[in-house]
Amino acid sequence: MSMRLFVSRDAGAVAVGADEVALALEAAAAKRGVAIEIVRTGSRGLYWLEPLVEFATPQGRIAFGPVTESDVPSLLDALASNTPHLLRLGATEEIPWLKRQTRLTFARCGVIDPRSLDDYRAHGGYKGFERALSLGPDAILTEVTASGLRGRGGAGFPTGIKWKTVAQTSANRKFIVCNADEGDSGTFADRMIMEGDPFLVIEGMTTSGITVGATKGYIYIRSEYPHAVEAMNAAIIAARRGGYLGDKIGGSTYSFDMEVRVGAGAYVCGEETSLLESLEGRRGLVRAKPPLPAHRGLFGKPTVINNVLSFAAIPFILAEGAKAYADFGMGRSRGTMPIQLAGNIRHGGLFETAFGVTLGELVDDIGGGTFTGRPVRAVQVGGPLGAYFPRALFETPFDYEAFAARDGLIGHGGIVVFDDSVDMRRQARFAMEFCAIESCGKCTPCRIGSTRGVETIEKIINGERVSENLALVEDLCNTMKFGSLCALGGFTPYPVLSALKHFREDFIPAPTTLQAAE
Image 1 (cartoon, rainbow, N blue to C red):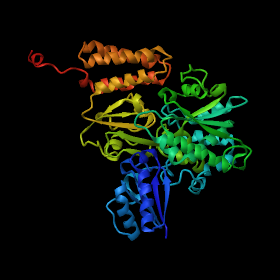
Image 2 (cartoon, one colour):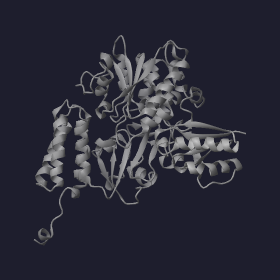
Image 3 (tube, rainbow, N blue to C red):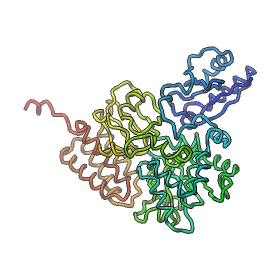
Image 4 (cartoon, helix red, strand yellow):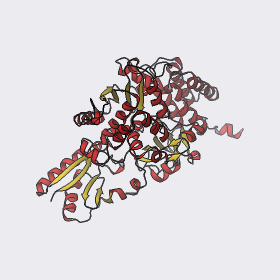
């Protein structure tokens, strides 16, 4: 009898020894004369338990973790003899952290072999695409619009409106571009889905192509993601071989093909027009809008640009219907959001749930508080350009409008936690420094404003004319917010102003003993 084991090949799991564990399992099995099959999956997203090893049983998978090389001999012995093991976590699907999620987009991630088209199809893959072929472009557009799906890259723009604009724009050629330039600190959902379920992204992009009349797609991946690049390229080859890319896809009259393009790692290339410049072989400089990419995008042609998670949501919407997706969430934020918990947190990983869960639930309950055990002081939501929220705002629902009402943004769904040892002056300085380093340099408010911001905050840290310089920083932030050409300079004020507003005590020097006596 052969044992079937599942070990992640996700970059996060590999970083903590998943490859070594897989090799150790093969060696230990050979030594014992035990037949085993190791399936390299994506990650389930429970990163504090990686490397996670799952064992297939007739009743379902049993999870063990975190497993090290030295644990392998005893683990294999326990599996062979059906005896308990200290690392046994029980049935994978019953692990509380996983069980309480609503996995629509990440349903297959960590479950299937990401290199196998057959495995993808056996778990419901291309079901949405097949329905899309029967519906036709207009009906697909109706479904996507009715689902309430909004751009998951950060802007939150309604996907249906963007697709409709491209569909209605006449041109001899159109393009689909997937923005996989995931550069926000504390985010890894795009990488996880590309490495763990790449056919899902291909299916979503292909469906988009059918809808708007595009025949070519590009997925733009940052160079720091070599595992994702490899996984997507392998999946594209398999999809093409299986008849899901190329001419007459899926036996239809439609044609669509795609390829991977690797970016050099500029943060500003996450902005759609800068990304297009890079795709066209030029330096990643932001374009003035209008014209919008939907009218004149890649190579001057109408272009749909969506984030990885936006495209990855499409197959569920088409397979199960718009209502099934829209039934999750709150207000104008429909469906689920893959939330990434990172920083100083006990249970770091990916948690997919419907919009509406509070920030406090995510940090204290789901995330388990800080890894250090110290009190949570600040949480930055939405990447390096997101606002810092204090505990007083932890009742805020995770929802586009709710965060905007508190001068915040949910962005790509990244949450970075800080304990009470954090110096918020340094965090504000970092925001300005990050902008100065990553600015494309095209507009003055971003290019010069961020540099002046670093200098001014340094003066505050050094105690130089604090009140005057605080007023100067606030004025500078307003100039950047309303005068920058794109969101890099426009959103940098969010972390700075939120730090000033909610953690003012870090910026105002404490009175000396003499001042207190007076």
